[in-house]
Image 1: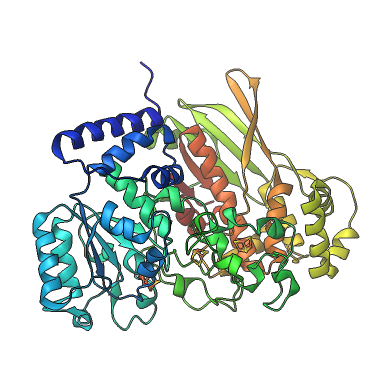
Image 2 (image 1 turned 90 degrees about the vertical axis):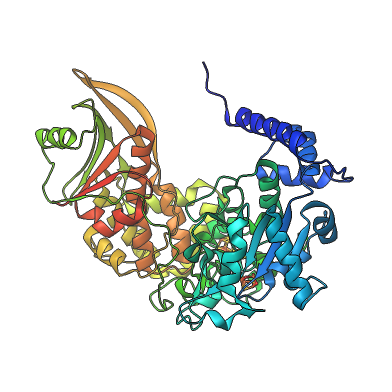
Length: 574
Ligand code: FSX
Ligand code: SF4
Ligand code: F3S
């Protein structure tokens, strides 16, 4: 029998929920719901053919209450939600989500307010939304509401809540309050509560991200699919950069040089004045703020990655690109941990026998081996205890031809080349003076060396790139989009097949070149390139559904350990 598709599963879940609410809850008819529910369903990726079912489920949810707690924060999250339109905040408050208790918005105060809270907690049909971080470790009493401190209040209310949502970066990851030296010992909710917390980060998050995620919960009584930082993928699955209206300017090498630059008005990219959009995962360009009026980059300031953990500490100077000079400090708290720790092996698996022994030892029926040294690179795919497939690469490495290919691709490439020449005139002239002969290679080391030449390090080899990569102090990869594309499968011998992989190195380099023109320093460029080479093979292993073993200095331990998140990766020293 064919497995049901994700859409069929979704439909079944909705039908089941509708059945269940019809039997257990009372219906309150709500008017004018269809338009906004429809809009939010499309944000969530739920087909609008299910609109009627969804509206009816919502109409049965009037006994669900919301308790909104304020801990250490600036109330920006509430401000963001207050500015919502279609539906208005009043409609949300009174008709749909029924906010029963809200520290700053409710009319009642003191004893009366505490009574409202207590009776909601006793009722048990409530969801807890928390704005702000939790002071701990001797600093708990800095935040005291009535008789309880913030931590006690949180634990008391979270205990019976059907779900807990962290609204904003403060409650999701600690936020500004927990920035070094963290005088109030601020913590994220998930660090102090022993239960699942759904994160809606952003300082503040958009009204849409709050409302649509709540809507999903009301419809399914479960959280939508989350990423490894517990953020809903529908909202935080893509980077700000990927959705940005200035991305065309970025790829064309058009960067505002400072805030007085005329390019600011012409839509030039803000990377050089500090935009961290490539490292921030959020849908701000799409849903925007203040009833879809604007968002940070449109308003003329770079993204400060406000929805990422430790953004205040970890992204360096706000108005400069990542560089050695702009780095302050790095906090690892709340950062995702690799799921499997790679095993560091000290012997070489160079021979076919050694590889087969490795497979037997680790009880693997399939494995990708990637080896690279200054002399050669090779990739083998072993399956069923024997060598069955070899992966092959072949790419151009002459920097002059690489630049020509970037330039001749399209208008963006042409403009990028011109801006590269403007920014790195000497280096561009030197590359232009090189011979025009094609130099094809299958060795990754040659690729890294050509990239370094384009980044302005002329007398270098690939090992230098790794040294530079290790000196980069930011742990964030600037995504160049390195990707191996499977092209052909050929029979190369008795029972042996070769899979041909095409590596469009020039294409990935053009993105790297844009970062280079935008002011990312050579350390950041080298780090991103080395990490992306590793990730590229981890992706192939995922496609092939097998483990991957790296062999050679290119895949130094820190690169591998950080780059693979959910895949079995082994590192082998030469
Ligand atoms: Fe402020 Fe909310 Fe930032 Fe924090 O938003 S906008 S400090 S995320 O908790 O109030
Ligand atoms: Fe937009 Fe910033 Fe990316 Fe430039 S770097 S395209 S301004 S998100
Ligand atoms: Fe924050 Fe960047 Fe969006 S600063 S609001 S994540 S554009």
